Image 1 (cartoon, rainbow, N blue to C red):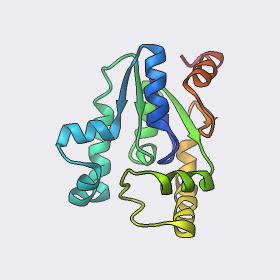
Image 2: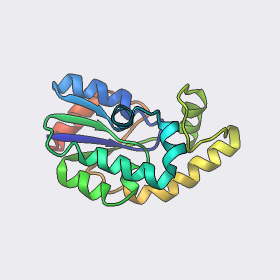
Image 3: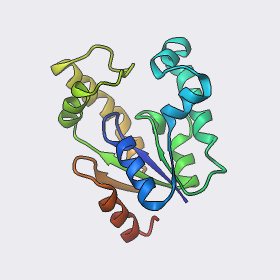
Length: 170
């Protein structure tokens, strides 16, 4: 079984994914980390050298490389479900969980984050919030294709495990 965690950057996919994988005894895979290991470059370097189109193609390649793996929790990039056939592919290959977080909460999290996020640039305050609201509106239709939607605000691995079991997604 594979579980793909989707949602906007800052929604908690990587943190929750690591904990969920540990609880399940599964392997954890962060797509960004795998892309960096595969290329030897950081995410900002990849974005700068490949542009967004090239970055998304590489992201799809790395996503599809999980096909033969079992017992895996995958933390995807925020845009991963929105390009090519990625969302349909993930739904075919495993179970998808959308970690929903409101734009204002995401803005607070992302302003406090130490990780460089190429799509955000140097946005802060109202500019950051407006950007997040715009991107969420673009991406919501893709995120809504997930097998399950949960709140990313107060989600824990234990809670998510209970939801997955109740929905018979695990």
